[in-house]
Length: 375
Image (cartoon, rainbow, N blue to C red; front, side, top):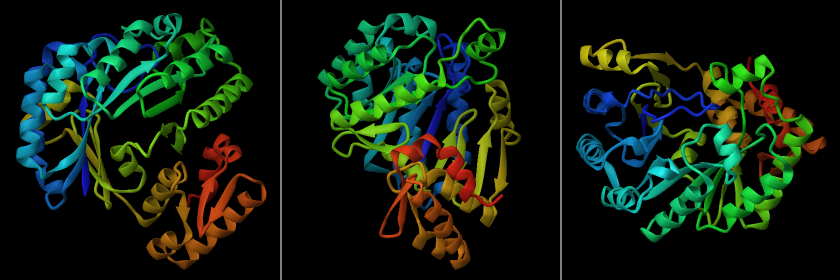
């Protein structure tokens, strides 16, 4: 089984915190989609023997696509790849794009999971982030999606925002849990170099939230999601009734995936490949059938580090038995010794040879990962 990720790099306006590759030049969408089709044709052998069980439209803002453009993409994906009838097909969207008419289009094209970029239910923070929607749009988009027949809905929220209080964060979470959403992705604000937020932070015109307040907001997130019946299955991801993101879970458990579009990444178990993060360069490269990507072969050390990096973040944890089988008994013993240290400090728990993070461990997960990795 494999997944396909499609990066739609277009946005109508740029959010001040976002460092994903995007452009506001939406006049290039048609030429981009033509290149996307050619890349799919050129790369169909990458996962030729695999059934595609997940497709994920990310960005950028996939909801800038028209119905006819989306229909064209779905047709060539089904032509070039063996997409299973029950494939999870996720589509990221901005709330203000999800009109009743557009939701009907998405449903007709086979989209069965929506990931809605809410980010906040408070207008003051939406304005600070330069989001196009307001809190009313956010609520309506989820209610309209549910009314349109979407039963697999995910939403994003951001905490750790400058000026965000504990009470405001709690209100956003409670608003989320009052809506028909069974999956939540909640991320702490990161100041990425090259974004307006990063520039303003360095200039001193934006004040970062105090570390203790960020810790309190993360604790509140864990408490409130548990009360609402959401299971934390990855550091930033929570689901009710087992409604995990199948696509992202496949990333974390090491399954193959093909990335199409500028800045998209691919992984087939032995190598990693990433496309150039530039629309014009991508268009030229695909047209010339060269120069639109870079690739590296993964060493055994790389594969082990990749395993630790992805699995330790999840409810599935790291398995000593699996590590011993894949990387040798010596590595397995080493992992068990390191894990023992974190068991004693209360950062990890062990169940049948599988080690997972405790709440205390979640706060220092990056440090734990480094201890396990082979440098």
